[in-house]
Length: 226
Image 1 (tube, rainbow, N blue to C red):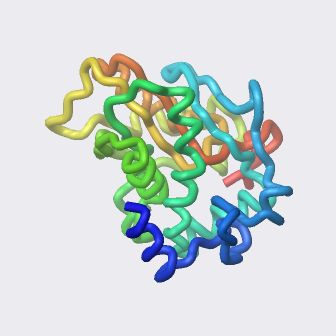
Image 2: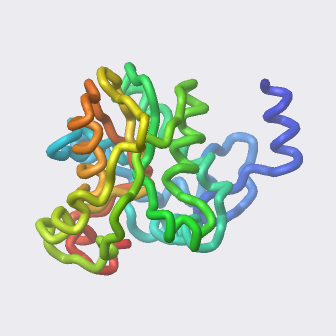
């Protein structure tokens, strides 16, 4: 396995997800220069809580260089970053959620995925599941188009906007399972909470969440957060 990784590194040298600089042998995820400036969540701020999930681990703040990195990832086809985001997220997930059965993600609508060409949360979820040696399954689907959450200021508006927008896929059973729901960025948490509500209602034993980044308090209220 190490030999395979070495060969892949020669063909596709690992790059910093923030500045695209080639990483040195002693650098992981991002270069040393970016690592000194990246906005990290720590302590009690590392996790967010919701109505239908007990904890959402989100180690980066969605601001500055992190925001720029995600915008490139989502809108400029830098899909290689998904593997790095997942590798960065993995140790946090292992520590917080040692017992999991399956990994899934917050799905885009069919129209959005067709327009973009990929689902950014799905890519992170699949890479993360590989590292965790767990199955990654499409448990949810978006069944109703919604307004962009970023255009809604109030938390109650965001909750109302996504209510009933997701459903369990047909012929899927989640009864008794411990599920990890992955998203790229969590802002107010309304969208991922609605996805968790669907899974809990369908009989999931536990539903946990992970996002690569989280909005700060100011960004959660800003219409320009995402």
